[in-house]
Length: 411
Image 1 (spheres, helix red, strand yellow):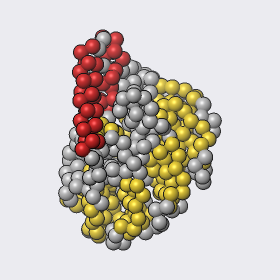
Image 2: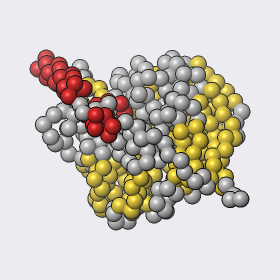
Image 3: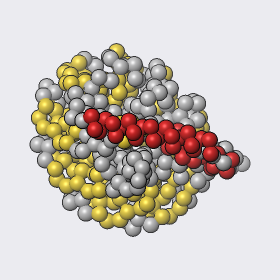
Image 4: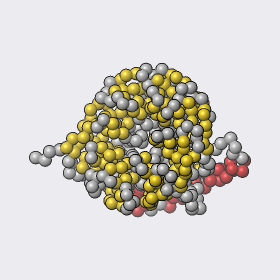
């Protein structure tokens, strides 16, 4: 695959068109689409063997295994994520994991396995969010559904009149929903009544997806396709601060894509956020003051551990960046072009999954691969989660598996 086509093997691109779009803008969209098709055709016809080699997934190499992932339980969740680049995330509370598939099956399992309840809903595009004793999902038609977390009974539903691709979140009596057309909406957790809306502009061309808001102490932190990270008071929808993570530049629409599609990482005093065609930034949480930036193009969540921030770029390079200074500590390219998942810290190690369903365990010290297992052959788009010393992985084709990590004793 030529290098210029690499983006399209990793993510889906979409045009955002709202009811306010004029015929002039519609014509521009058509022109951009035609230009993209011409670009792809030229790239495909004029590619060199060297370019093809650069964009091929790197074959997995042998390594010295020092640890292994051991499956504790697994379950089949029907068709899983589907083929439209949806990312139905896992939801958790103190004793359960909630999982949904695109056909509308929503299930609750105990953290150690065992089905608690299951509900059949309409086809889904987003979920699962858990909070305020609710389980929150969104249908493919833009309807947010809230269910009782104890028994799965429906509590309310609200048509937000826009596609939802990130799991709704809830805290302090407010449910937060981010739509694909650039709106962040506050709903009553009791009734689903709309309380407020914050609106961000939407570029013509963008990645398919939105950031999942992170709520802490009554503040929602999230990113938008404009390349901005915002902090919003969830009680009234007022903007506390907003900061650019990337600025659109370049001549082509693709070059100007600056989506913040991944959830920010919120720590005790800082917020870390990455953007496509932009940077990884560290901001001061209280006022958004930028502390440092690292040049990277990413649409995946970042992780923190060993005084590092870990980030994967769109080509599959994994970076460890000093959390205090923003300086690079190491880079791992052994998984180049393998469409890596967001990294997660587990049992003192770093874990990523790839397009072929392999889950790789790495040293946090230097990125050396020291363990590997395969969940299935479909890949992992949904972020992996660590809860109660178990790593939960949800594959694209619908396998949910919980793993422990064990050291291998040398003989």
